[in-house]
Amino acid sequence: MGIRQVSRTAVVAAPPEQIFELLADPAQHPLIDGSGTVRAARGSSRLSLGSTFGMDMKMGASYRIRNTVVEFEENRLIAWRHFSGHRWRWLLEPEGEGHTRVTETFDWSTARVPFAIELAGFPKRNAEGIEKTLARLGALFPG
Image (cartoon, rainbow, N blue to C red; front, side, top):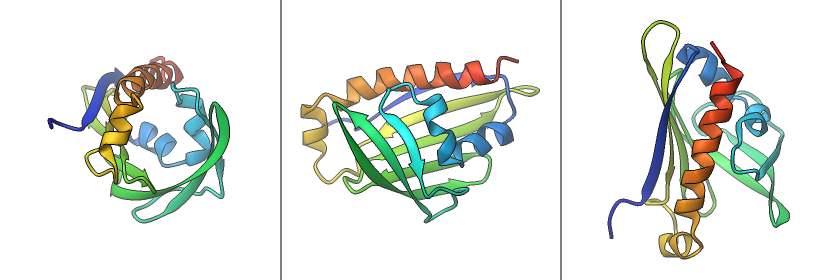
């Protein structure tokens, strides 16, 4: 069936620590969301491994989603999943002085029904959203 993930990478003019702080605070996620679906965090605090956070979302209709942090390495890696099992992963790698190579991945290899995600066109749509998200992230740190 092939690899069930899409990733995009960009170099951002900020150190990994600054970017990680933004990613570890769900209240900041609407600032960088390029998909246009993330509206607001619910009951959020700084994320850590195993923590959960809610999001108000809108894709056609408004809805709420609960996520669980399933990967966490301070200033380097954070990933969360929701009930369907797919993951959003962020990898931060230092790239020269004050810059970071940021890779965002939508991984549906862990989804309960990966075929449904493919049938609904989410891999292509999410790849486009990731590109916009990385552009928005870069605009927050213009260097």
